[in-house]
Image (tube, rainbow, N blue to C red; front, side, top):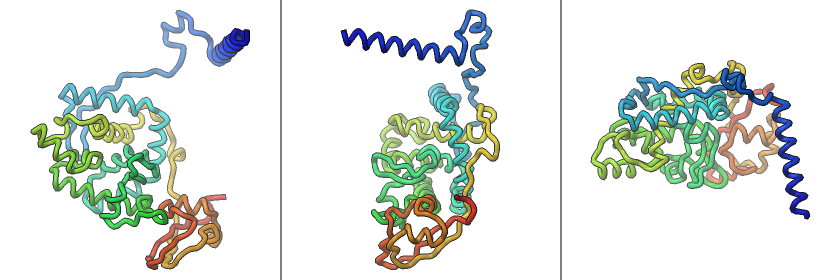
Length: 306
């Protein structure tokens, strides 16, 4: 008997849900369904631009396999609207920091879109242990001069991690020959890409048979590049004031231990949370600094918080 009562109660809830939906939008009729008046929202197949490229290297969309794979990533990223809009917002905040560092090292500007697909421009943590906007592994970070421990992790330092990413990409380009392969190697490693090229007797990323992640990697980068450069074409609408911007900061140099970052922050008129927002590479509420290393801690200018 109790089971029947529960079933009836469930049916009642479904009925209420249906009434709620129809209270918001009238039920479709044959007439308004056929004239497409149910909803202003429509989903369209996307024309694939003929000149898609990564770092000036063309995507060979005349190949039917490449065309389908490119189409998939454009569709997925166009119609994942919430994520796409967040990428526009975050790009405005982080690209101005990333772009001059890429340029300084002679790394093509298109590599900023690699950071977009790696982390969504957040300080992400991967199951494999990669961290930060550039998703750098601990060994790679240390090999390139970043400090990585429980107290300080400079993979979360955007400027320093971008420098490391540039070094890695330049080495990959030198070893593999093209920027496209260098980008793929950022995901699969130089040795992994070199091995696959040799095994399959090809010289181009688009001729390789790869696993799901690396096989989609370049297509995802190119799709985000295309969408972020053409918001109107792909249906993204926003105003300049809707985008995120950087809060200006000034640097405080520290070459001693800091026993309490809460009190340290208060000295500069901010709280611990704000201090960590601007210095995510500080991983604990204190700084050990036994070696008396010189650190630069960013403090936001007044007037941007509370």
